[in-house]
Image 1 (spheres, rainbow, N blue to C red):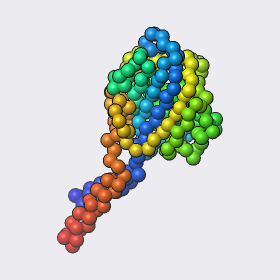
Image 2 (tube, rainbow, N blue to C red; image 1 turned 30 degrees about the horizontal axis):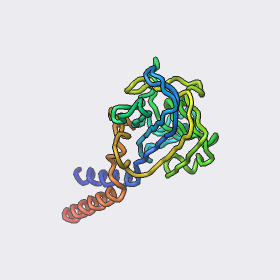
Image 3 (cartoon, one colour; image 1 turned 180 degrees about the vertical axis):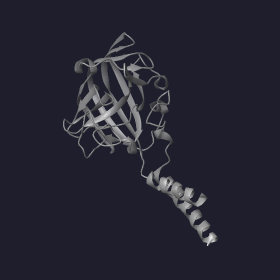
Image 4 (cartoon, helix red, strand yellow; image 1 turned 60 degrees about the horizontal axis):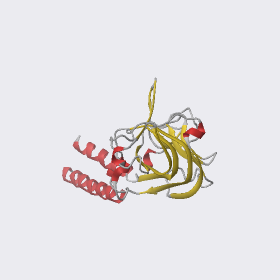
Amino acid sequence: MRLTSAGLAVLFLVTNAGATPITLTFSGTATGSVDNSSFMNQPFSIIFTSDTNDICQIGQSPCPLSGDVGDYTTPEPTMNSFTIGTIVTSPENAELTGLTTSMGILGPAVFLNPTKNNVGIWFYNTADWLTTASSAYTSSFGLVNNLSVSNVQAFANGQLGSTPMESTVGAVNFTSLSNVSFTESLGAPSGPSGASGPTGSGSPGGSIAGAVPEPNTLMMFAIGAAGVLIGKLRRRA
């Protein structure tokens, strides 16, 4: 029984060796309000962290099989943090939390609509809250590759007719956006870790992208464990 368990552990490690942390950043200039306090033309940055293994496509398991079929998305909710000029200056205390409905909370996530070439932030598999447009947003990008685009066309929730986004510092409402950029980077986040979010929310099971070992480390550990297992088998023989 011990040998079987060890074998399964090795298989699990090898299977997950390809997992890569991802950091998705939206930045630019916004006008709007936070907790009903208005601001104008303030720089903003919203940073999401997830993992390539957690990206799925609506209509295919483990994503919902109905809804915005064809869209790619990060999990619900996706860990994040944000700053807005002099209004929200402590990313470790500021996290978008979604929308409270009669059916529960619709968590924030990052989506890709390859048909319309849109990437944005949405209330998972429902309404868009912030949308950007670029010809680089294709199915081959798939939210799992490095990408950086700047000065893209962008629409705020006020322009989309969408509700404000609840957060740990109050409801965030954007009425207009300018000079918007989107960047996705593969690998563990560098610098201040405010992007990991203050409340520990994230992908199902509480996985934290920054804590996932690098693929090479996982593979080496798996190979080492496999060697131990083979040694046990030989001694038993």
